[in-house]
Amino acid sequence: DVQLVETGGGSVQPGESLRLSCAVSGFTVSFSYVTWVRQAPGKGLEWVSLIYSDGSPHYADSVKGRFTVSRDNSKNTLYLQMLSLRAEDTAVYYCARFLPTFYGMDVWGQGTKVTVSS
Amino acid sequence: QSALTQPASVSGSPGQSITFSCTGTSSDVGGYKYVSWYQQHPGKAPKLILYDVTKRSSGVSHRFSGSKSGNTASLTISGLQPEDEADYYCSSYTNTSTLGVFGTGTKVTVL
Image 1 (cartoon, rainbow over the protein chains, first blue to last red):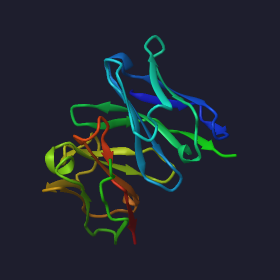
Image 2: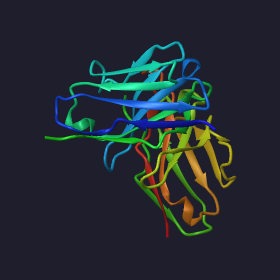
Image 3: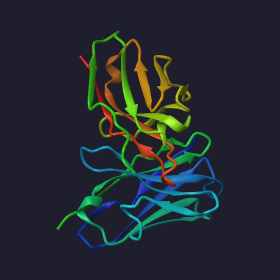
């Protein structure tokens, strides 16, 4: 079965950092595209980043320069390093397998909550 | 990148059919076949229900169908059931970003 499990969420103060993990089973991250999507409380879905199978990362303008996506092929795990966090980064963060054949996400993790507040 | 426009809420009685829209531009919905729809129940992760405008994801009921005309895609739920009560989001490829774009979301209420 294909499964993604996010961990690493928590409560931090503005300006602090956090690293989210997305542990994958059922497919190989080094051959796949994986995306991070977030959802602020009571709001809609927002695309955050996408990492291609060749490892090239892509980001939303709202996080560019502050967030970095990476992966550890040996652990079949992806990471989202978040620096200089702001109150507006408060959200549930989901990782999902992205299929370029239809430009969408077929399997999602359960999400991990990030709260940025003083 | 601006979000695709969806109605905030739609409601219907059990057994009825409802249709709601997802409006973009020629740079996204209107220009490509890459429109997907996701269903999200409260407190849960989104679930893919349709992709490539009309194709149902594995295991998804035939009561869900999709279409597109111009810059607007639509999702129809036939024979509305209580378990269809959820938030629904469209998404599309866009040639203005390396990421896709989501719709604003539609809350479906079963009366």
